Image (cartoon, rainbow, N blue to C red; front, side):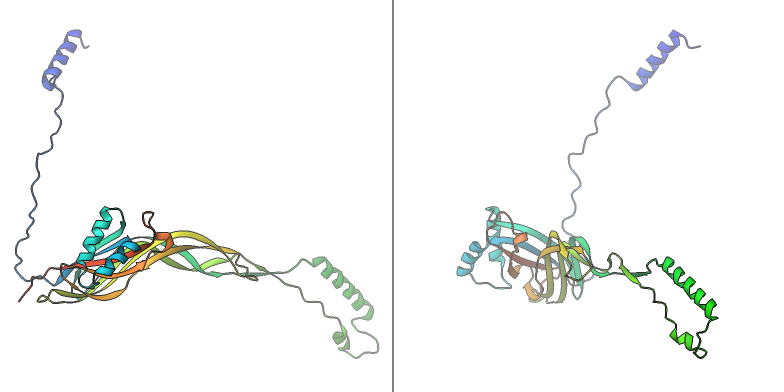
Length: 297
């Protein structure tokens, strides 16, 4: 049995072992090891590749129109325009709709995307089921009458040759069939991705001039709403739903100077994608590709 003296002694030993001080908080280190910013020199030449960046920026039509009146639009030298657009962004007269960066090797294709997939029925099928109406009572009555006639005439009618009564017999009316159509069901689907995506293919890279030839396909798709469609008159499909989208896309082949901005193209912003900060919006698509190859003379 535990006595009060033993209990007090146990408490003293416990306090002396643990101490009466609160546990110290874990302190974070004042600094972390700095990562090496300059990679070591490779022992062999790197395979030709480029870091490709595409920016989609919505600007005011008025601002771009005024700029284009006093500046030349060069596809391989758009750094001046990109700098001007940066000022519009700071003054809230432009909106960035997305930026994508992908690392692509020479002669290869690379793709990056951030999307949501929508699937919707594109083809319907409707099955037909045949059913016979219930006429059992009438058929039974007709059958009884025929049996009575056969018993009276022994299956024959006087004055007629054998087999003639078979020709004169009235054929029983064929069972009427009613076609019942089932509810239509989808048998094929289409899909569309909503979001932002970029596909890049590099055809060639010239280390002497720094020129890069590539195929680019940026796409910006926004889901707007789901529309309920009614089938044409005489069609039993009823109603079905289908999503609607607004999209901006550019697909082109372009030659760019490594390290400089180029203008891929410009298009009007659809009404459903227009930003609240712009009145008449235009979408400018900029591209910049930085080669990993040192320039040679």
